[in-house]
Amino acid sequence: MKLSIAMCTYNGARYLREQLASLAAQTRLPDELVVCDDCSSDGTRMMLEEFKTRTAFPVRLFFNDRNLRSTKNFEKAISLCDGDLIALCDQDDVWLPAKLERMEAEFARSPDVGLVFTDLEVVDESLRPLGYQAWEAHWVEFGEREQQMFDEGRAFNVLLTRNVVTGAAAAFRSEYRDLILPLPEISKWLLHDYWIAFMISLVAKLKPIKEPMVKYRAHANQQMGLLLPSKLKDPQGAAARRRREYVVRSHYLELFLQRLAEREGNPKYAKAIRDLKVRLKHAQVRAAWADQKYLRRALSIFGEFFAARYHLCSHPDSTGWRDVANDLIPLYLKRDSHQ
Image (cartoon, rainbow, N blue to C red; front, side, top):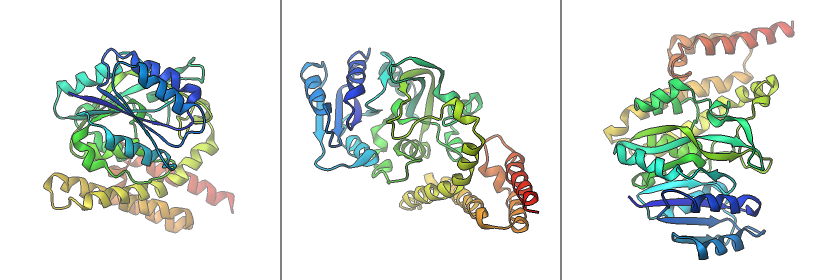
């Protein structure tokens, strides 16, 4: 199989050299590196051109005439790849030497696997370990049960509740490119990696690799990063995440359905479309609660529960009671505080 790396850069000179060195040190070298630079104004372009002259594999460089931003820049890089497999690459991480070899082996082992992704070791700006891996962080929250569901071919059920796939640690078969492109401009909370993983989960298996294959830098200049453990204990931060969750979820479920509408007559997508419509209804109802008074909202909560939408739309192994309690108890306390 021919393997391409799709890399996007933007003013990344501070960390780029170490990432490029890690690509050159892979035990399975890529068949090509496709880099789309998004109008960098630092030394990124010079660094890329110098790397191209001395590397053992083809490097194809594309310098944008205008700033496309992350999502559309990745769309361009993916569209330019010639490989059977496409590995996504950020500019500020460091890959472990066996990353591409391990991922290719998973694709070769099963033709049903459409996307492979690994855990990440979270490090600071100087690549010093912070003492935990990405799947332990709340942003990913990808435990043993969810990993088992992926291995059972039920990644779709997990991804309907949250994203667990980090683009910098993922590779996919290029045969699914027509399904995922064009990448929609979703939001700062829902980037290209979620879209790619979700769309491929409709037609193929997603294979997680427990071993971290990427050193993931946590630094202030990231477009979007993992939540550090110290932030997980912040009750205001947790409340803010809950408030925005269902407004955001309604938005991206609508986008998923819009893309699948083009394939509504295909029986392969029929169940996925039905499931998405149920979950969109639930997300829209919950998103409207912020403007509702206590009694109306409480009745709506119980209505969603007895319609079984809590069970369908909560954590994959939840009965729905946990979400009902999380919605009712803060609402009751809020009502008491205003009496």
